[in-house]
Image (tube, rainbow, N blue to C red; front, side, top):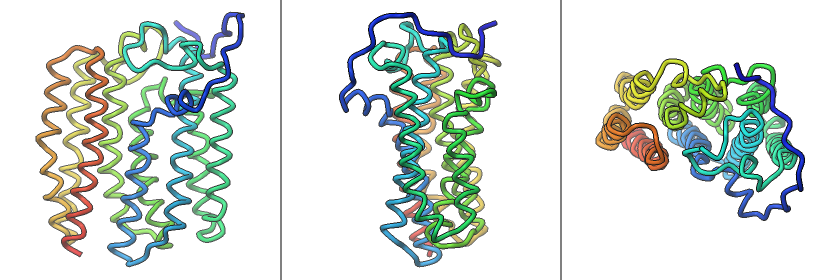
Length: 310
């Protein structure tokens, strides 16, 4: 069985200093939608339900969340390369550390710097909103690294989808609403679950695409552990779950927030049909792009629906 500790890279000349284009590539800009949409959703909730909005609070919250996500991606790039989870056989977009374009040390340092940025941006939020910011922020900072690193990396234990549902769904949406309004409400976790499920679709598709490489490296994602059929069923369940969860909005007096997002179902079915018809391969990179568009479209329709009935 593969070791869970990073292997020491072979000696050789250090890669040249990367330009900003490489760092932008390492940040995985397509995935940043999953960090931005929940923050905007929580802010929208506060505006519609509590009639409060602060551009400064939005900028600080969004900047901090995106910095944490970029740090997560930087750590993932370096750690997966060290553990052999990213190789030249990778079906997804090339990773910079595995490709020798950025050293592991530089990538890890970039991750730490992004966490410093996230912390600095969150300090004013601590002044305004108090200890809940610490309760939200500290686990977020740790799991940015602990997603793929540390003594018990979540992604290597089949907990990647759960991590995304919790932190890119529940925490991000409810936390953003709290930052903006100063109080908690049940609407935040409900919307957070919906967006968390759709954000987890990106991870589930990524893990199904990389199933063979993950098995070879000992990365025990849910798809690697239970097989392609399970991985496809999981993607279907995650695509359907937001519609079922959304029925709650009818009971809360916001029926349009439940019904308008159903307009995205044709894209949901198209995504799942594509996953069912195609074996894991490079076409899954297209599915990842569509799933990010799906997340954005769902959130927009939900926001219009909430506005319609408030």
